[in-house]
Length: 290
Image 1: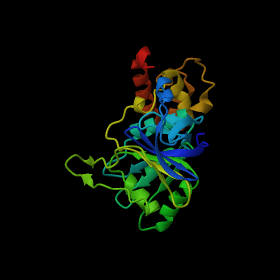
Image 2: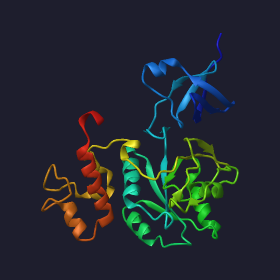
Image 3: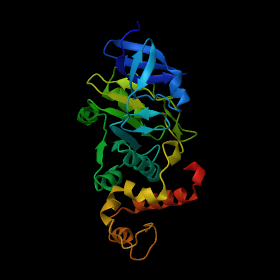
Image 4: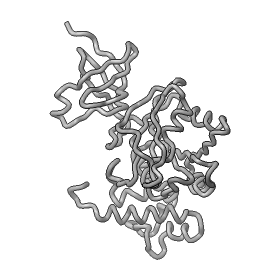
């Protein structure tokens, strides 16, 4: 008779070999061929059952992102540095939109506050109800705040290469020993220190994924959002759903409530600009890409 199934969480995937953490210990195993036949791949963060040394079942996911493949995230934490590299609001808004689309809580953490001013970032994102935290390594309380944020949750950190993701993770939990890299002065961006998605178990409970840094970003690396679904992913637009145009694009229409809110200073110009750029990109998508 075969052994009974063990439940666990996938913490790492490398070359078709999955690391699964269970109450009985950590196991390295492959997945049943049946998943491949069904076009399903196990993701880091998946809750699974293993039996006889293989992953026999993938439990229902509450969400997932495509690249890097991660499942069951409670929050996506966006690391934004005040400088070197400077904040890129379009990239940040693209990430936040994906989080909103997937039902993952977006959080913004500002780094390098000793080198630049993060007040504009704070104002834009706190005004729309997103939690924003500043990290100052000479003030341990700021690190403790982020540490508290990660407790008993499955979180992923992402952001521009060189924004300080790995440095922050090591400050939050010194047992992690995640390699960091200095900014490449020549390129003006960080060297990629993270090669694949991996969940690290935190001393205080919870898991954190350090995702590969990016230099450029396409929304469809994480998922594709249709143009008609986009406005709902901008939370500050939602209260203007009574817009008198049923199919209003909220980009330029006369009498659009979103445009009026923008003109009245109720919606941030950078957020609306990001929305218009993303709307145009979504319009260009071919049906087969969707």
